[in-house]
Image 1 (cartoon, rainbow, N blue to C red):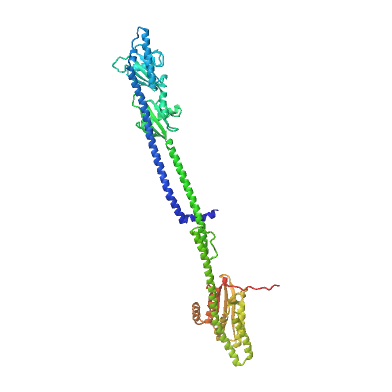
Image 2: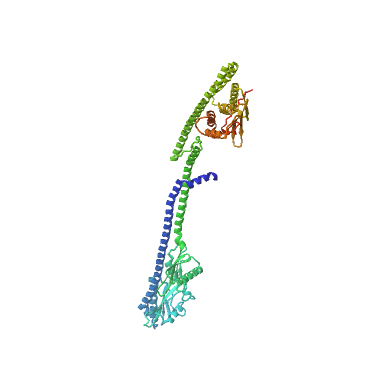
Length: 604
């Protein structure tokens, strides 16, 4: 599978269309990624700024509520310290018991009515500096010694102030201050008048808890109301009290170290802190973990990330799918082109896509068929041309041979040697039948040698000397095809230009045919023992053989041209002679162009 996929992925890396698609995807995806990043960053920054602003507003609202509550305590203290019914009740005891009871009853009624009207006040108490009694809106009168408010009243009287605020951090050991906060004022409120008593206004800390309880700051956010010393009055924190106390103290310490800013970051939280400006100096802390802020941004970021990953995945799969649809027809066309380039015009495109590439495949198939037809026509034309050329060359040989033979017959006729004429005419007719009636242009070597034996016999009858023909052929080369009448001109030249000029009684011609395996050549050698050629004549003959014109030496040149036509242009001819040692003609024929005759075996 990997071997099959490697060419495909190689195609993907090289294909212009795939690169174009990837660029288009990149052009569309990259801006989307940038836009998503900018949107998330801007939204996160905007959300953070908005939350910071809302957090600051929240703290300000809580502080305003606390200050409003404390201001109401002060106003109530001043207002009720001037009420005549209260001031008239803070006098020396009357001698008449009934009158004293009525005064106390009126005072308690005023306190109860005020407590009910104010609503969020836990209770009102009045201490008479004259009688030493403590009258309350919700408790029976009692002496100072037995009253739970004794330590508060005594501290107020000791300081001599017109008003005083007491919370749980003022006297941590007092149980009465653990759940309630007290505002204490003198009666009358002005210090230039003689003090008749003390007014105590109490508010349960649960009221402050209710004021911040409905504030929602996420699952981990919280609002805390602390005293000036850091003691928790009310909080929405879900931590245990000990853990929350440690947390608030660390926040206050960090806030003080930063110079008491209204907002700052600590750990992973955004914190807003503000201290009231009234006499209570309470501190409001609003803490929002950053995780709460970034939760929605993380959801958006993850959604965008998943969407982008899905888009990239779909885009990548689309590129691969499109590339595969493009790869298959292109590979088919490529294989067709490679086959045509290598000369295999039988190859055909079998997969046609329904697009321009499919049209190209059909055109290539049509082109291959047309090229085949043209090559077939060209091959037929070349074959015809070669046949016509060989016939033309043969026609150049036959008249020359016939002229020499007829001269021989004429010589015997002049001598009236009828026996020799009869023998000569028989051989001549046999030669004519071979050369003229046999229409095959190529014949087996053995058939050409039989013809040469008749030809040598004819020459031996014409001249007094005897020419001996020696044949040495390696099997099975006696069946190899050669051009018809290709050796006869060479034998004729050997006799008339080599052996006869030497004027000896006997001459020898050797024909050798063998295969040379080291360079895959089949060798044909014709060698005589005639006069041969000197170096100058030999070089001139070699140069003449390389030229296309026939000129002189028509017989040898004719044979060489026919050999090249049959055995291709790779065939070679070599000439060797050292003078008085005869001439050696060697043909080197590529073995792959040599064709052997198939031997037909008779059936038994």
